[in-house]
Image 1 (spheres, rainbow, N blue to C red):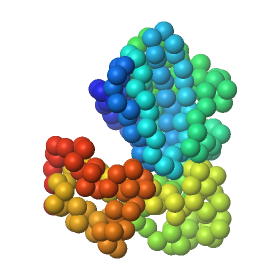
Image 2 (cartoon, rainbow, N blue to C red):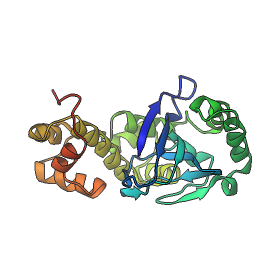
Image 3 (cartoon, rainbow, N blue to C red):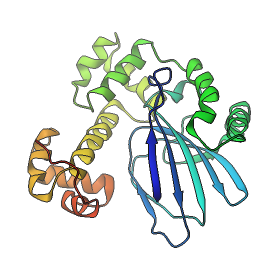
Image 4 (spheres, helix red, strand yellow):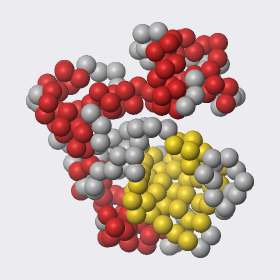
Length: 246
């Protein structure tokens, strides 16, 4: 997918929204591979004169998204656990937003009638974010897990939220679609992917240890499971490398 850009959501939305993003694709382009990130997206898609809004749930495996002829997309990527308190939780599936929340669907489309820019839907997303449970103890625990890129003792984390392991697992699954262990695994993968794409093949052993993998074999297995590629293949596919791992 060409012309992909991410946009900072601003301080008012930063607790709920990781980023806005825009992308364009054309007929004949190769499919774009999307990787799990623990997040939920609201996605606006325009193909010619056809317009749709999709709620895209938490992913547990990579997916190849085919390029469409003259397709424009704008997404809002919500942080793990944010929307599980307000909209139906989807895992490895998507749904038309109109059938999930018709008012939000209308608000977003109204915002986009003026121009296809992240700022155009800011007000609608702000209203949604304000209705989300962002500050209770489980939400703070999930946010901390995200901030630490999954590298947290989960028993300790449950205790910090005044929850038993079982209670924390139940709430985390209800809000993110993933157990704490699986969410932590996904977040650690995101860190490993980010470092892999910035590191030449010769430095990948350092990435494995920096992300807490016991050895190179475990690192390779995990990256192939989440992306379909080995770390070396990813490093080559996404060259050039802006910066190597220190």
